[in-house]
Amino acid sequence: MELATWIASPSPAALGSGYPDAFGEPPAAVNWATLNAEEAEVAWRELDAWVTWLKTSFGLPPGIVPPLWHRHDELVWELSALHTHWMSCHDETAPPSAPVAWLRDFADARTRLRDWVATCGTRLDRDRPTRRTPWPGESDDDAGGEVEITDRERDFDEFVRHDLLRRRRVRSFRNEPGRS
Image 1 (cartoon, helix red, strand yellow):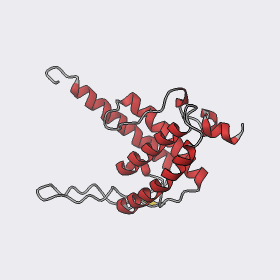
Image 2 (cartoon, helix red, strand yellow):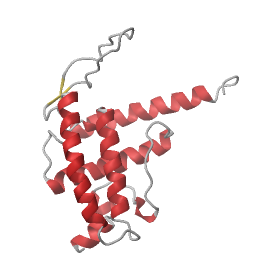
Image 3 (cartoon, helix red, strand yellow):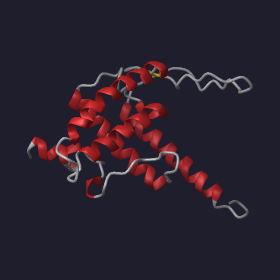
Image 4 (spheres, helix red, strand yellow):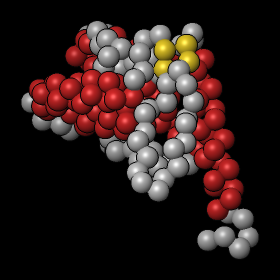
């Protein structure tokens, strides 16, 4: 397969197993706050495959895309927006100059990603929850300490499993009689 064809329409085989072929549909932004469990599972798997491709293709260091990016909301939203933008710029209906616009925006995104990674404190071999500064009157919930990263893929799968369970519980709670 030619590189230009692969970039414009990567197949599941080209990106690895578990990557849904979403290129038959028009690109749409992902609102992580509103996805149900089924939508979230597809979105997580697609984003993970794309982030892995992005990291590998552009040689991005962990200071830009750390192994446990999925555990940091700020990185998920940034990478998800970048992914949607990439799909839009590489869609068959996009103008031929759109990929150049994506590359320009990618340069800006790398700066923001560096800032987010520095703020949250995650690294190649260790991760901790994003630092949060409580406002006056808020509790200072300690989200836990630093953990060693030993198996990124297993951590991702476990994280997604917990996220999907949480989404199913929220949906179930909302559907209880007497709830609206």
